[in-house]
Length: 223
Image 1 (tube, rainbow, N blue to C red):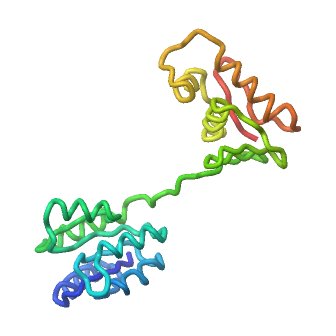
Image 2: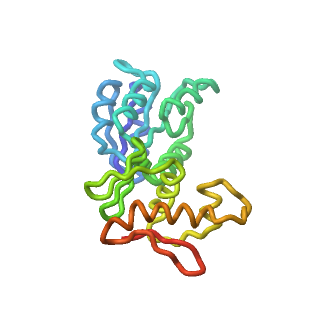
Image 3: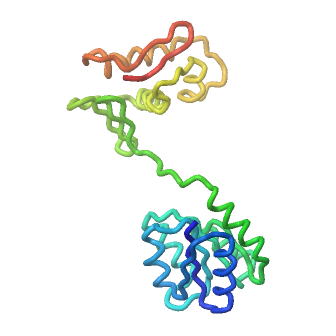
């Protein structure tokens, strides 16, 4: 891994750098908050180890700025600031872990390895698309090709659920739970009625159907 260590105490940074290099990692060392921000924002590191008390720009401000810029590199605070409120503040600022000085290097290494194993953060999708059908979750717009489709709120929710499960079979029970929040069967045709209305808007006027009935099972949405 490539690791950025930001620490203004030379003895500490040398100690951490040496230990990480012996563990097979590539290590860059900085001692200033402004430099940490500019280097960290490039996204070239797998993990950042960051002191809170830094010249130029403090560690909390560095992390907040990194997160605001969209940088998702895991950050481990390594600091002497050790109050409970301080740890909470560090994590809420965007830090991923918090280790207090003095520390055991074996614990530091274990935490770094744990951070590196975490799956990368995923950005929540704001638009769903299947073939030429597009659903904008922010503006609550629906389009198929060049045609704008007006959907009622429940129709929109139903379509969103079907599109999020593209290619999967969703049963009537699943739809009742996820779209209507029914955890029992109301013994009505509410699902079938809404599916029919949705098909009339997004399928029937167009050449290719996207909503498919799976006999005796449910529905599947795919191109």
